[in-house]
Length: 496
Image (cartoon, rainbow, N blue to C red):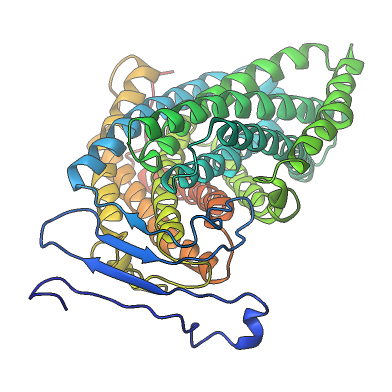
């Protein structure tokens, strides 16, 4: 203890007592020292953590250390709470505008001919929107970590990272889009008792085109934001994922409704066009993108080892699609608020997950926890006070309350032209929204630390699970909220 207020923690190079020597294999962790959990007594969002002599370790695509960095000191910079709040709040509000737009678009397109006649589209929607979290936010998290670790200095290296990550997302988007379309068609066939082959091809073609185009647009925006933030010395973890959410949902919905509408007009008379689209993506585009990824050192490992989070997340988002499909006909206005609660929850938890992942990368080695955080903690400790990331979690929870309130009123006004929400609806919506974000933030703490403990890079794996859970929790809780309001005769009544 230095003086009378600065605690000091020393972490020696002995392995975790719970890890056997055999489990370590040939990899030896040699953390010479982790010094300086320093609290200056002020109400700040961070502490200064000095980590010395971190050897190189293989973390898949991240590869954040090399021989020159092995002997370097990493400093987890102190961030003032008002600086972090401002950096998160502005993109959060911009993201809210995007989710409101997505809700209004979904509320309008549900009356389109293709949506009325192809019910599987509603099952597809959450999965397509979920690709933002599965793919694009992972890209944002990976590049933000690289920026915070000081690896984005060489133009050649930056270009290689960008090309590799865009190519990887395109590969994942093509495969994921095909799988979610198969899931949507299969579930819809079981529910209605009829399988229409042309509708299945329509969904597959619409899904693939929407996923690849929206991901490409979103990736370019994210890369520009991260590069600019890094140049301006602003933490990209606070900016990238909210801005991804700001345009991701609305771009995906507009593309899906437009493309599906156009293809629906010709899917019976010119079915060969749909086959041409699928053939191009599966036989030409996919092998080309795979070739590029295999040649890139930053993304090559994810091509073979990064599929589990994406596929599991798609399944979870698909369950959210079932909730949407069940609610869309029974509850007026449900589709307006569903993208908002899902988008805001996924947005905020992605910020938290990305920040925790960056902190772990900066201050420790895979499998070893730095002294300023803990693995299994109680909800209060993870969300309000007790670990390094609790201040950010608390800030995000507080931010969600006024944000969601504004979004509810604005979405309702845009959709109806006048305000129709009741106090009962606002209170119930805020309650389920708060439950959703607190559950997600707590799960984010446990999941990110669990992955780190088992030497799985959270940048590649955590966000897909969290955003998919956000979709499922948001849709389910909102469904329960509408059921509750109907039971007390205070059901939401939009002007039709």
